[in-house]
Amino acid sequence: MAGEDYSFFENVTKSFDKAAKFTKWEDGLLEQIKACNAVYQMRFPIKRDDGSIEVIEAYRVQHSQHKTPCKGGIRFSEAVNQDEVMALASLMTYKCAIVNVPFGGAKGGIKINPKKYSEFELQKITRRYTAELVKKNFIGPGTDVPAPDYGTGEKEMAWILDTYATMRPGEVDAMGCVTGKPVTQGGVRGRKEATGLGVFFGVREVCLMTDVMERLGLTPGVENKRVVVQGLGNVGYHSAKFFREHGAKVVGIAEYEGSIYDANGLNEEEVFQHRRKTGSILNFPGAENLASSLDALELDCDILIPAALENVINKDNAERVKAKIIGEAANGPLTPDADEILAKKGTLIIPDMYLNAGGVTVSYFEWLKNLSHVRYGRMEKRFTENMNKHILGQIEELTGKAVNDTEKKFIEHGASEADLVHSGLEETMIEATHEIMNTWKANPEIPDMRTAAYVVAINKVGTSYGELGIFP
Ligand code: NAD
Image (cartoon, rainbow, N blue to C red; front, side, top):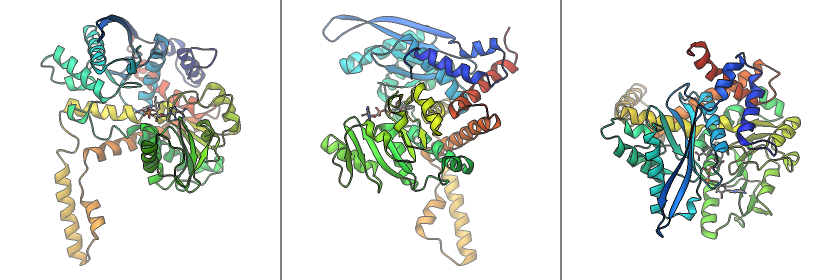
């Protein structure tokens, strides 16, 4: 997200200041909301497989404790630096506030390219990092709860949990010290598709707003909307899947190697399998090849979902982007320059800060599951099924008519863990979309939806700090 002239953290600060003008908080309080409360920079040694010693540079930043625990992923990347971790930690505070996840923001980073280390070395690095966090009280179900981010996944989260639980024997809620764990280690069902599903719920809600759609010259609803997705990874794949399943046409998909286009709509799973077999999305049967990955961003479509990298829409190509709606599934896919160019064109940009919050929302559900020590649905699933069967039986008996088998199965079934997680996510995204849109509508001087999202975030954090009068 960093522009050419500012650091990433300065860019976040700039967006914050732009939005702060539309809030009522005094300068001192705004300073406190913006500041990173604690920055832990560490160095520790590990012995490589070849016997040499390497000193690892790592960070954990807790941006805000207005709600605890703090929450945010851990990134393994050579590009990690303090400024980036601080920026990402701040964004987590605002993201959590918008989707009503009662956490402060945090972020962690280890400056390594994970591809250059063996699994054994990665395990040693992850465990030592966790031990350093434990020593300084920078991790725990009530203080700071990491999660996966760029370069990390379920495996690293399982190592973190094991290290934490070993160092804190007998801590009954230890499982809640980290989220994004494998389901067998206290993870929650529905996490994998959460971000893509959240993107779909958010965009669908905007598409249901008749006044907004009228302004964009589109009909309400996602049905038959032409969608282009950049990046067929976790978030892109699932976004494409949910749009297609709800009647939209995914007319374009972009990956590293190029893009494909089919006006009749593409099936993401078939494209995924084609890529697995041939090593490329190109030459997909019935689709047209486009020369580069960037070409897909300029396709004639209604909704564009950049779900790969940051800065892909910038001052060089923004003018040629034809989509009426851009749903920022990736973090920071638009540069500030692109934002301005597209705003002038009347394009609606649904901001990353809340649109890709599905992951952290479901992480919150995972943490709640860990603290309650019971799987979602365990207590009520069978009861609901038995009750639904009974009601349906009574209806059939009283009317003398039989309900068909498909409907019967649907009506009878009790909610599984994944059903409840999806439903909680749907509620979260709908509520957040309306809150941001209502804030925007209430003040015509707010220039765009991104600023409106910041206003919502600042007001919520400000309320939990300010109105309680908690400062000494
Ligand atoms: P991923 O690694 O699973 O997928 C990214 C995909 O983008 C890969 O398939 C990659 O090949 C493709 N890609 C890379 N460069 C490309 C290019 N130039 N053109 C087209 N495609 C390209 O990652 P992900 O988890 O899907 O994350 C995608 C984005 O969403 C990132 O910005 C991430 O920060 C953000 N995000 C992810 C989550 C989550 O829960 N996974 C949550 C919030 C935000």
